[in-house]
Length: 496
Ligand SMILES: Cc1cc2nc3c(=O)[nH]c(=O)nc-3n(C[C@H](O)[C@H](O)[C@H](O)COP(=O)(O)O)c2cc1C
Ligand SMILES: [Mn+2]
Image (tube, rainbow, N blue to C red):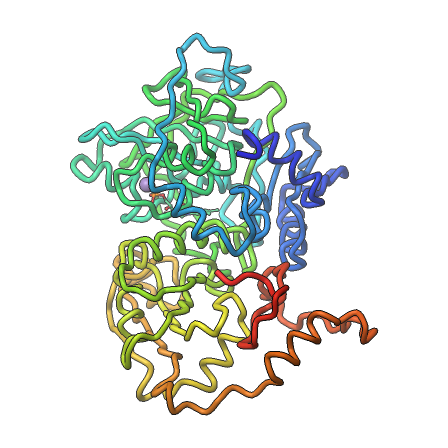
């Protein structure tokens, strides 16, 4: 649909003015991270560093770091992704496996054993206190030994030495759940970097356990993903991948891993002995692009990558009627805070929705659910705060749930919880209007006056203001006008 594979997507982004080529050498030790941060804060384009660390292998970052580019990857507008996603993934499209003798781009160069040298890949040190260089956007392909089902998930990899990677995957991740019956046994893994963006979207989304993310990526793209067998392990990888690392996870062979600047904007978990991946082969294109993602203080790519698919999952799995839109916010790192706009069906419905969102399968990591009326755009931070400020009585509308499961990377947890169990408090803020029928009316000029001004705006000769956003943690700019609760004119941006 629209394009095939990463290379064609990059062409599309270039046509759309959404790709910048950085032609000067950029140091891997934090300079590259700093360029990512500055560009992310400005809502900038995808970045192709042509000479990272003076080397010849380009690094691609910030690819899907804005809602606009996430939508472009799906062939839809930035506010349509939730509904487009659910419409397409109703019917997963399984991948096709090509024969082992296929001349696959991902195996133009095959490096086995000692030749498979990780230090040939330009892995950056992203943030000041990182424990080493990290590969950050590797799609880990594994197979469940009990069911034979495939999983594809993104987890961080510290580069320990030429043939060893670290792996940090939460106990709830599917790569770990697949191994729950034999947690200490080594198992094969293929790390895929630089693939069709719809594979990355699926690999970062909380699809139900047992779902083959390649089949979801196939459904998202409208054609089956083409796979080829790996060279040294019994797994299959996308034929057009840029770089593939074949190896084995060794759960009991641990190396000191971390710390790593996480999506929360803080260091995530202490430096600890964690499991390793022993590399058996690296296969790649002749001139590959290494696809990575910056993580750290929001805004960053995880804000969008882990949020958008999860928003679709929340809508799909919460069966209460009246849910209009879901926004997992940038300030919450695309993980911790969620805003839900609902048609309030009866008194108490806001809290009802809040409880359902917290307890849906993909709601595990939410700490704060803000439920707003349907006149509030959940993507408009000003409108959401306005609703909280003017429609909430804390004693009546805020509920706190104690010691429920959270995410161990949350820096606000007591240290013992960050090292393991991660029990957290959660909060529901019901910012829907109480007793809506008798609620004071919203004050604005009439619908007719607003629509006329919208239509005839140019006539007034008013230039846009020059005020810059004051927050450093500002959400990426949205292309549509933000929706305040105002009458909708004919040319108003569509609501979700
Ligand atoms: C850039 C990026 C890095 C991530 N790193 C990790 C990580 O190191 N460990 C982890 O458990 N999840 C990480 N995630 C989140 C997982 O990708 C996400 O939970 C996904 O659903 C995992 O796939 P699974 O559900 O099949 O396990 C990361 C996500 C992104 C976008
Ligand atoms: Mn999965």
